[in-house]
Length: 121
Image 1 (tube, rainbow, N blue to C red):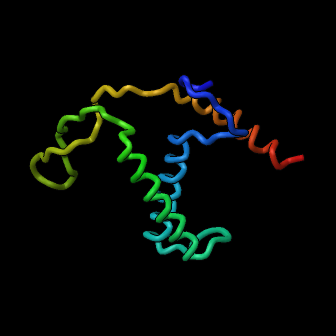
Image 2 (cartoon, rainbow, N blue to C red):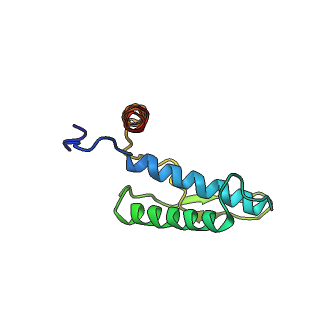
């Protein structure tokens, strides 16, 4: 049982970790493309495009489902080489209600072990 939810399937992926995986994949691909490097691995450019598009859609849904309702105020922003100060929202210095990430990761590792047991016989 996790947070009052009965888990009945064989294994699970925690949504936040799935979101972080997709964020990292988008970040990785962005820097590949920006640096003019060819795609890495066995995926074609079309496969990368489809996967990254799916990542953006998954993250859009996660954000729109209210993954965080912390109110973040404006923050001063100093840009090196530019005069003056702008105002933006960085999220820094604002108290957020966070989870115990280590406990979440331990749960996910256990789920990965269960998943691997379904096909490693």
